Length: 356
Ligand SMILES: Cc1ncc(COP(=O)(O)O)c(C=O)c1O
Image (cartoon, rainbow, N blue to C red):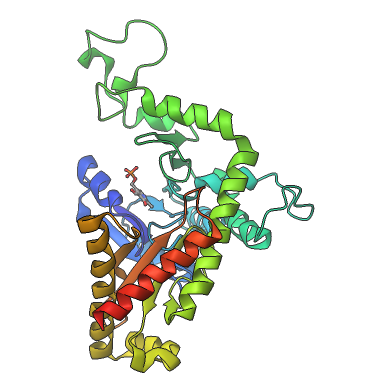
């Protein structure tokens, strides 16, 4: 059995394949486009190749909101492709579509928002609409994951797994006779279908209270603020020599690379060369960015001063197989203001001066 997901999907897919006994070797990773969404043409090619060999497609996993760059797969196209291939190959089963929407689900609060009116006066509303234009098709998935502890602003852990057809849950259910001591009444029998036995109810309650407390408008304003701060950050960090790697992704996350002084004025060319064939330049700039990250991080950890930001060792791989390291800023705090963005950029700038 094969499972297909993009090359920037989350490693938790491997965990699940391991637990289910499908085997981690059976994950097929599909190239992602420049906007970090799965390449639909490559997905089609791969699916056809597998179906021609009579392989079983257990699941396709579109990611709606990738971990690093907030790439959003086009689930509408994925679902259409799946349906067309089921017909064309007269399959006697339907490959499951599980949407890994643990990060992006929350943008569905805009499903019925009138972007023309923009009654909440949201900044960047045209761009938020573009995110929602993909997320609004989440209902096409056979199942979806939601993490309230991510952009749902709830504490760890409060995850939700939703199935469209409850009969699908029977496929992974345990027989009740294995649990003779439990579940004699009521209809809530989680032991039948989850890995855990005992678990707390805190996560669910915090998710529920946030949904009630914030509502669609509250979430809309929080998300728009996060996008606004992200865009401001991108503008400011470019002024100190950064290239934004995920500039095609509007969302809470920015992946960027800073270039040493000698490349500053032609940094876009430098980035292009690095990804085309200049492995030594790539290595040099990877190390340079890692040094910036370590300098900022060291100040936070040793002195409790400065800012916490992050790094990803492998944003993507170049076509010649080398890792592209990126610095990463995730603007989710509702308290962040314009002046905080200035100080974040100042911290990065100071770190640059100190390492050179
Ligand atoms: C895209 C994506 N999928 C899945 C996961 C796993 O979610 P959790 O940590 O709630 O198990 C994460 C992050 O943790 C993620 O970023």
